Length: 186
Image (cartoon, rainbow, N blue to C red; front, side, top):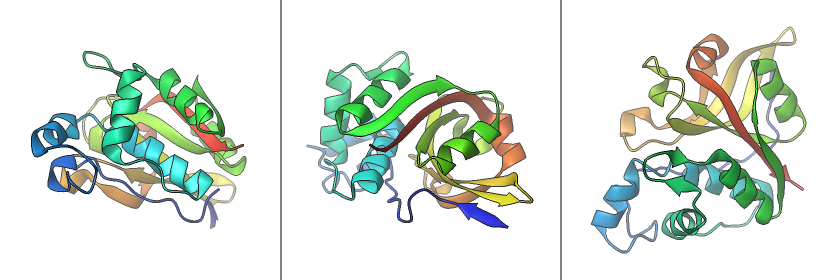
């Protein structure tokens, strides 16, 4: 068994904003509650920025506002993946948005030093393959075959928040849309 992790320490950020709204920089609990179901993309970007730069990124509220003003989030659409990738690049990272076909491409990106935001169905439990963003930051392989991906899964529901969770590759594939945002230190 081998573990592939481009970064040793990848911080985890929740999207349970209304529980810690002051610490996350939100002006009030109502604003935090509004964004609570919508900040998966912000949490993932914050995790990548801090892992790649080894510096504290802005708080969740300021990041949310900055990304919203850049139209990286559209209320009836959700997160615009290209704009999230562009934001990471603007902050000094190397990266891109892409649609991939196989999990082996994720392994190649991890081996090349990328952290990967992926679009999945929430919690790996329903039949959806999109609607939620999580961070893949590692993989487990046996005999050169990926058996699990290591993910940080932010959520507004405590029972769906996964930190360093090893997701079996077949379960991941069932719920993965193919859309990724890959970012790394330039």
